[in-house]
Amino acid sequence: MKRVLILSLALGAMISLGGCTGYYGGAGVGYGYNDYDDLYYDNYYGPVRDGYWSNDGWYYYHDHTTRQYRRDDGRHFRRDAADGYHSARMHRGRDHDHDRDHY
Image (tube, rainbow, N blue to C red):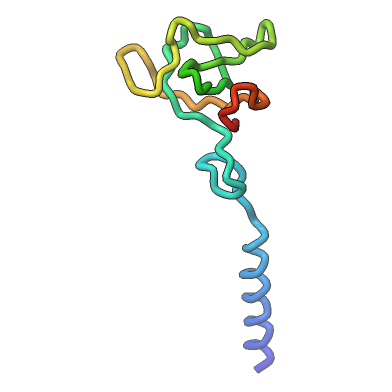
């Protein structure tokens, strides 16, 4: 009887502690915010880690040499696959909602 009680208490503790874990990012589960954009890139600008799609249809990438966001005028970032482009996961940059797209 004592073993069953100890085992059931241990199992209950493990189940309740499992509710303390969280998921932050990736598919946006957890707090409802997706920290990444999956897109296609042709490596024109070299290594780029973050940027954002603006509501004007352009992609703005973070230029680490100038530490500013620059518009991709050459369309080197795409939402769809194309020859010469590879899939990339970019950290979604924060434009502090200057373009009012809620990112």
